[in-house]
Length: 396
Figure 1 (spheres, rainbow, N blue to C red):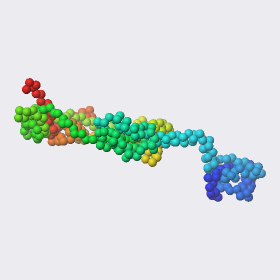
Figure 2 (tube, rainbow, N blue to C red; figure 1 turned 90 degrees about the vertical axis):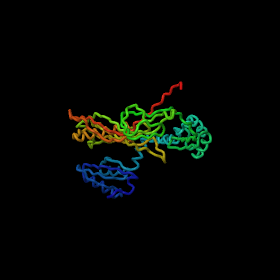
Figure 3 (cartoon, helix red, strand yellow; figure 1 turned 120 degrees about the horizontal axis):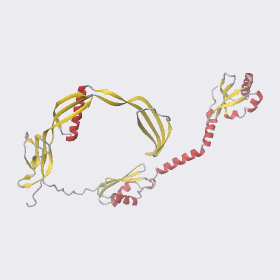
Figure 4 (tube, rainbow, N blue to C red; figure 1 turned 180 degrees about the horizontal axis):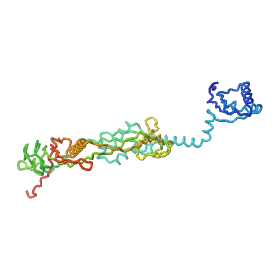
């Protein structure tokens, strides 16, 4: 027989009927049928007993039948809403405390916790915060008491001289005040007269003098510190400007191991679950020792949200992956290529992305103690000009 409709809502129990004589159990089952008491999932047990399900309302009327047939019963399991409500009632203080906690969290998310000021360079942040306080923007203010953002923006723009626009935005419990200061003509910066000199020994490949007098030409060989563009022009000292490129030689000593270690995943992983409140987390699943000598942990946060507000409470998952180190072997040729690539990256990092490696030459190469050693000469076209102030005689 199938379970009655709404049996889980009304509640039912699984009972085991036992008796010294099997015939008495049959009589008990027949008496249930005569009294229209619904039972289902009858299962005879190996010891002669009978297991069955019965609704909670009918369970309390079984005592006369048990007494009349000489049977006894044992409640094996309980199901349904009444038992769930009973368990909840036993934990009513915990549930009440949790409900109060959620209410407090929702209350806290209705407050302004922080006011940030961005974009101000000349206007003092404290002046902006004072003007915002006059408009009701300050920590621990109720969010619903704030004016519309366009009205706040207009009032702050009016109260803060030197601003062309003030924007007010809210992200969760944080108010951000974005300042756009009015453009004021900048005073022209004063520059001392200067030369452009070479920062390295080089062969000039390109020279362009925007201001000043060129002292070298293309294909000239120059020394470090030699003047490229002079700031003395027509008897006057000027701020020389321009661009000078040249070929410079850089020598690198490179060593690359033929065997290197690399961290990889083994495929084994474990997962731990936490309920977090702000910066506090309580572990609820995944107990036990990891047993991994090496591992890597990835953390995923799934916060509760209300509308567009992410609450400081939610579920945190830690996925711990077992790792190990393996040794990878390089061929001598691959080791040479990797070492040269490293040196090329270093050249670009030191001398700029506009540098161009024209040629490279291996001067010396050997393999010893599991490493490849090389001495490599790089021919690089790069910017070779740097500024050098002109010291003028005070008596002139």
